[in-house]
Length: 541
Image 1 (cartoon, helix red, strand yellow):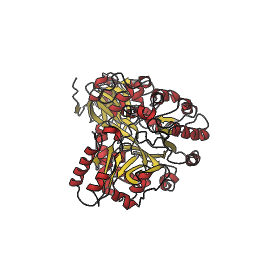
Image 2 (cartoon, rainbow, N blue to C red):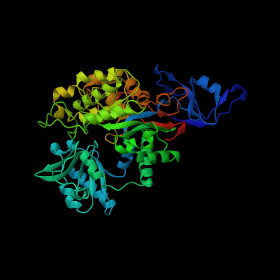
Image 3 (tube, rainbow, N blue to C red):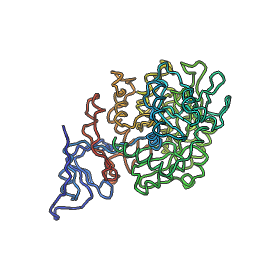
Image 4 (cartoon, rainbow, N blue to C red):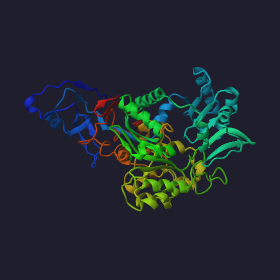
């Protein structure tokens, strides 16, 4: 069915009208995502907030507006909320070499050459998205070709997970990196005693420090480009995981000038500058569209680059269990400093050893049920014996369904068959607290929320693989998935009183779709289209 929207000026008898509002939407199928997961037909909006939700007759009789939208039976959901992403990082990636889904290192090099030709000079060449698991042989590349092509221009190409990079020798020289150099929580990879240019986790930062600082115009370009694409996919709130205080300064300024409208929940990176910044020392920072109330802590690396910290060695690398990015004592010190504040501790943990380490630290300070909403970001590989920590201590598992369907092609090689069975256990994690936020981790994954929905419900990727779903015992229901993408994501950010459902008093963030996610066949989920996106009652797409 094709939906046609009519926006018209409504004329009513003033004696029949109780209240004038900014916007009325009627003849829709509205999923309120309230506690009953109820449905409605119409709603009224004033000053960016929902003032009434009900039947067509109720709303049209009680309210009047110069802006009336006849949705012609289209589907309305609360605006989607991505509970774990890198909004700024995604914007930056739009101005770098796109290496997502490259099938070989040769193709990656070709893309770098094309980018360099379009952007000549001596400035840094930055790229993101390569994944050696897609390459023939699945081996990590070296920087040999980059050295030949760019002997006097620095190059840094970030792996898809953000936990490894390839840099050329010129970049290594600028950073003063020498063969045999070591760093806690990172690796400068060697081959035959020579640096290969492959940097893992904390080693990447040594080179990144040499990249020139961005300008105000850079931030404006990155963030507005990211916003445009996100609104088009139905996203109205995004959790940006791991910004510096300086990043937040730019975000706040662009929101205040109305160049940036996206609603953001920001986690500050666990770095010294964070704890002396005004955002931390004042107990947090909240405006109409920005909430800075989390600290992003980095437990371990990623499974794909073998940086995730495991209890037992990798199945495909004898004797290698990965590593933590900081000492357990550091995680303990952060928890101790945050437990009496209003900040959430939000820790990246992928491997079962990293998850156990962080869960035990959390339990030490949370001491049972609570409403602190400390989070484990990813919680990909959790030993079954450790699942109880989540429920016992009200710890929030913040998961990304598409990680399971991206990793399923090679995760078994890393983990072995038995350990894989207990990985990406979203249903078991959900059962711990009976609610769980969902995100994408974009630009590690694509920004598309419909791929999140497909991966959670059918445990399939965009190719429809595997036909029967990947480890379907951990699939979520459609209602659980919608909640995870709306009200539960809001709850994870302690924003459930403002956004996440279509209820009186909440901000009018909603989307209009051409098909119903609760009913559309699985093989048509990725064909669902966002027709309109509203933020604070304003149409932004």
